[in-house]
Length: 184
Image 1 (cartoon, rainbow, N blue to C red):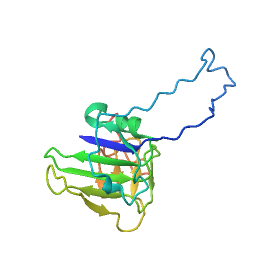
Image 2 (tube, rainbow, N blue to C red):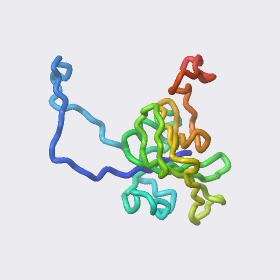
Image 3 (tube, rainbow, N blue to C red):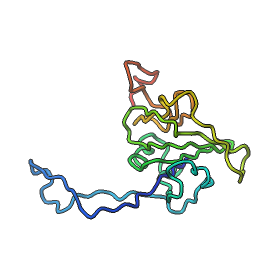
């Protein structure tokens, strides 16, 4: 099971910008329909708020925007729920109830690119049902390629850090993965 918590956007704007069609593609529609973001309001934070005390999310309201057990386990499901929601905390559980997580200060946008940052980190709890503070594993070895944002894959922290749902085929450079010809 995987959950993503992101900062809720509490800013409101007093103006509206709507696209104008030069080719009459929006004829008959009085308003463009934009879906409201969906959040799992019934989910409490699965980590202590002190975990974010050294980040810019300190004191911000966080909401669960993705729950793999309810929203689906595919990369498409993940990005549909998490893209453009801002910085986030990822919580995951293994089949043997090992609880772990990661902080992404950049958020997801399905850019098929990577981001350099020193602010990302991984964390885990030593024991099952541990109410203590998690152990934090800071980014080491420089800021390079700390976060990967592949539209066809799940969250990835560094080239060899945490990878949830590997991309179906590499999207950078001229490399082909083993499943490039799998028909998906």
